[in-house]
Length: 433
Image 1 (cartoon, rainbow, N blue to C red):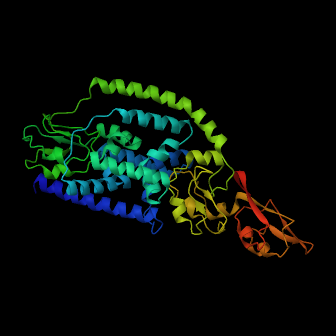
Image 2 (image 1 turned 120 degrees about the vertical axis):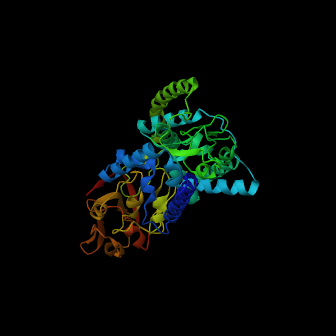
Image 3 (image 1 turned 180 degrees about the vertical axis):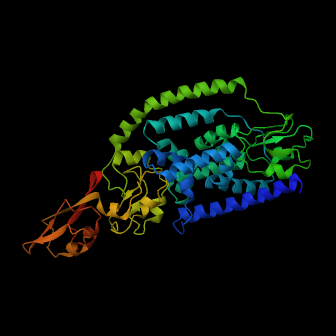
């Protein structure tokens, strides 16, 4: 079997695998079907989970993701990232409908500044930049029709229409990190200069615009390993593997070294500005009831990516999207309550913003506290039977009383009350009772 036929088969396998991942991601983010937890292996979510809610499994997954990139390059961007796969599909449609070929990249250095600033702010204590630029968060908020997600989706669609994978290559902070690893990966796509006739077929097909057919070079830092070029070359001059002797390598120019130094300086400034940002966030915080495992209002605001996966998977539909009152997801007890035997939200959150709770932990976690308005209460006892914790009793057979030491703030009593005499108040810090 010739290399070209082999590469063509590998390309089709890659397309099939990517399609399965994209389908699983769409089913998962819409809340229809989620046995394949593709969002648990999204890179930034893995990084944050290892810091906030460490498990051995999450550590292994992170190591494997980075090792996979070191061995094979940025296959993650074309096989695992649902937003990357979606961009590829949309890019193919644009090329077919509008007969558009690729062009040469502008070589934006902006990506280094974006990545350094994003991670500096993250390690300073908030994921707020990743909330807007992380591909997983953008995919989730877009598919759940969140206002910001729709804006980001429209911007990325426009970028794909004009410049294909420019978001992945020149903006995405996760892509920048993977690109730097891919640059030193063991296996690369490269051009054998002795076989190449500079027909530019590969250059025109490349969605990352990382091939220079005249110079016979491939920028593997930008290459997302879609593998289209390998099967398209009529001479079989493109190869994927350890570079042979005599092939032309890509060498960075002095500007990239200067850019790296400047980006590092920007990172220091960004990290220093985190305190100002967090203080501003703290001032804007509003008292809301948070999903189980959130901890406290300020920390959760800084961790939640607003992907809305928990919103879609809540069986009682009481988790609402971010709004003007609070910039992350929160609970709304107006139509339902938090089920005593449910912990779905904490199980689907891939980023560690919601700690993963056992059912016993969920049942003992206080997320709020119920208070009876005595002037409204008619002492009917409906709340007594509704409370799953046994926190509500009728004292002396006449007066309804709540034992705050047993109440977890699930909201069942408030929904059961026929005269709406019970209010659920948030707690400053979620704690086990």
